[in-house]
Length: 146
Image (cartoon, rainbow, N blue to C red; front, side, top):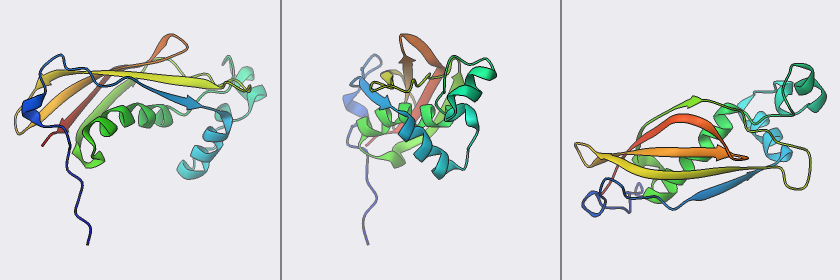
């Protein structure tokens, strides 16, 4: 039987203000189609440009939960253990617009340890942007460190 992963970052080695390595996650239309298949969310705003524009969007947009999942990868990769995640909350502020070109879109994620809590946990505040605009607000995660 395999042992569960344990966070590679030690609680005693981080301070309030510790910055996580910045991450970027490319997003293209193919990724959205794969996510739609995995999640069962086939809303046409996520794959049909004509429909998205008819309902007032600038173009196809990434699923909110897709954006949220990509952002938390910056934290779980930093800890070295997805199981270290105790709590995660965000507010959706703007959609990630995914044009149908060779570049697609990019989700940029930065994080900072905002508080050291009890039981070897820390709160990480995230800054998540795409095309220079904040796409997730109040993005906060609590992780348990070694």
